[in-house]
Length: 274
Image (cartoon, one colour):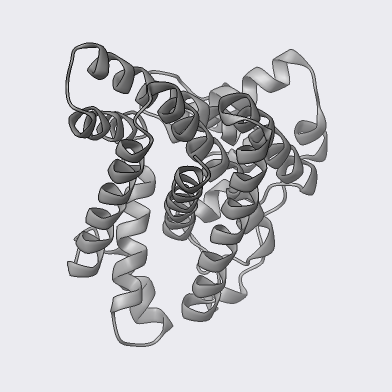
């Protein structure tokens, strides 16, 4: 059977997605952090022993993982500036820190997505390129421009307080928009991380967006936070529509690319607002 017509994965439990008890939130946060970061956090026992197991159930906690990544980058930038390093070097170190703590998960997705766009052929050919662990010229260029734009945005902001707000908002909202794609698009193939993660509920999706907006508002103010959410959703939507046309749905690489593109759009807009 063609993998684009596979039956969708069952949605996450509505009870799990809507529960507001401390234990349910801690469970979701642990699952999100174990998958989206390299922190030494084990997934909950009911995740099947693998970080991706039942990941969609923790959709509302995706922004928490972004908050941790953004805070790490902000601390590194602050320390670098306190040591008297240049703004450029501080920005490079901050971006490197976010990549390391995030395990380059989304950057890998962006590279594979770019290589897929650059290859000629049918849907199966494009999917095979995305599965290939090797990186091509399109992926290399995409990563290079991605890092350059992030560093340029942080250098443009300069002030550690502004940099911290931008890093946190971009990482928080960049992950908050992922459940939107996971609910709105079909899976492009059976198997893989996206297939194993399942589908979030509508409640989980809206909670992720709401929490992302709230955390971004604390980080950079209500106005920039609202702009960040709108820009992030639009960027993710555009990536999802490209994926729909090219491969018929989404994969884990598509989600990674959407997160990175959303981050870039958010950072650029925060710089413009500043």
